[in-house]
Image (cartoon, rainbow, N blue to C red):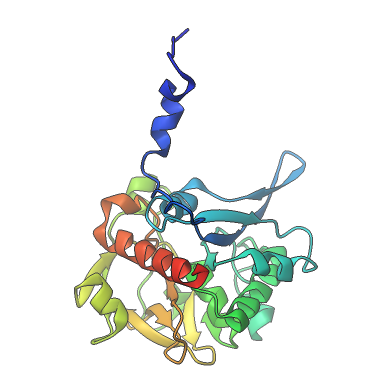
Length: 272
């Protein structure tokens, strides 16, 4: 059995070394992350993958507060009262098309109605409070739907659109590898943040924004014209949705690091 001179010699403490240190006398921002529903072996679970949590801690310098979606909406306002930001992650489930006035064209795909309800309420509450908001993949689509927009349910079936889905048989490294370029809106704050007019991104989605929700505008497009990033120009607070997955091995991608750092800075500014 290994002999550790002190408890802090244990290797588990080395795993914490990437986290941004707290400023003395100040708490770190608390950021809400809603969990997804998952059934396994006859039990219902609430889940969140490590890849979303890690860059929020390491690069944004925030403390994640994981919010269960299995208990309805009664505590949404309470969670929002505790929050300095809202982080809407991706997931394997699709948003219920009934929420944007369409019938379900992908019945073979999983849905998560509990997360739909909670996330849409969280978004509206976060907007009302002026909280920073960052959405990834499904999270970007949720932001659009919450504001009255709708989606292409099968981007790959739309004329002139590319297939943005990953190869389900490939390894995660291949699935999350750079897939195609996105062009950032010229002069936009995202272009200034990333320091380039175009970046390479991964692509793991079958759905995408069709009609914008109220107040939303594009920040980036794929080569086929599909919207890849959105913001709210009339809102002074950090508001960003991206269709790609910057959380994947974020520390290896300077663009991803900058995005998470900017979100963290906005949350710290909100905290004051």
